[in-house]
View 1 (cartoon, each protein chain N blue to C red):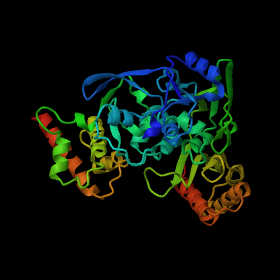
View 2 (view 1 turned 30 degrees about the vertical axis):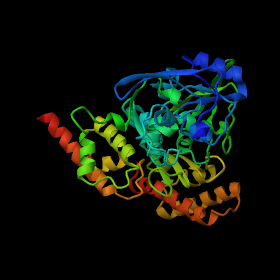
View 3 (view 1 turned 60 degrees about the vertical axis):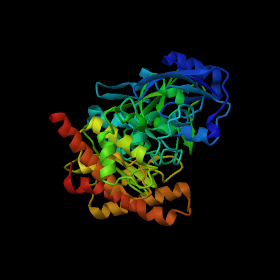
View 4 (view 1 turned 135 degrees about the vertical axis):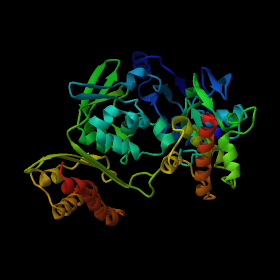
Length: 282
Length: 169
């Protein structure tokens, strides 16, 4: 194993290009160090990107938020800008790992690791975040969903680095995040759900729902969204939407050992997420 | 811990402040900060419990933040300000947190204690008058299998009081 500590983004991109599929970016290290301890990555070239100021970008420009991939979850929790513009992401960040993990782990790392249970991903999906990938050859920008290829498999090509996310600020949306796990802290999600909504006198004008840990990669649940959209839902509509959510999940995963639990749990999670909105309005 | 030692073609040199003193030494790629502290620097306070960031026994404070030293690469310590439990004590005696842990019987087997102390230290540096809930949140990444949490929370509360009183007098 070799360790490289580039001083700038162009230098990092040069190293990623030179070592191709042998290169592994090191950001927070909270997943990577566990894998190294397991004996993986023996011949790898670790490229330490944790000191690159280019990845710490956080700005709001004409309603658009640019969020650096190297921002840690603690930094997300401390950010007034994100509290206002991306509250759903702040809620998700507060449920990740422990304080020690949140002090190290980055939002970019959480995404590229492509774990089915990455808590920040459903939040970024409802924000309709686009991922910006840079390489020595150029820049690609694509919807987040497209880089989530499969469990622990991202669509990021050798030589590319996820540098930041771009999304429209969501200050005028109501947001909710729910997570089910065995404990409150330090627990991997069994299910997570992110919601972004906007309603007027007639009912729900905008509704985005993303499910985590229920499918091989977190994803938007369009069927459930369109079922509720335009309605001024009452509690029994939410239970119906919850059933639809469970069906959508099972269509993708098929019946598994955990189905008996997850089918019920996911319904409850949706009701719990949306009930405050339905009761109190927006 | 053998896995942490992997051969490198080019040596990696790190220089950082450790418990107030400058250190400079060579590290291996893939080596964890915890391995460096325990095996090369002889600081056995931070413990390896789970080796995957779940137990908090390896907690140290880096640039004022509590982190799991098992999840940090030793090379990443370069240029940082590092505090371990060995650096809490001053020439005048134990740190108020350590005194409070003794008085409140917050130590049983002791394995989690260095990590608990460092998480508590980082909390009080950031928030000198935490509520009980804030103490719980700051320590939620530290597991105690003797289940002495009540005494630990009481100790952090007592230390916070003592420190803020000391500063105002």
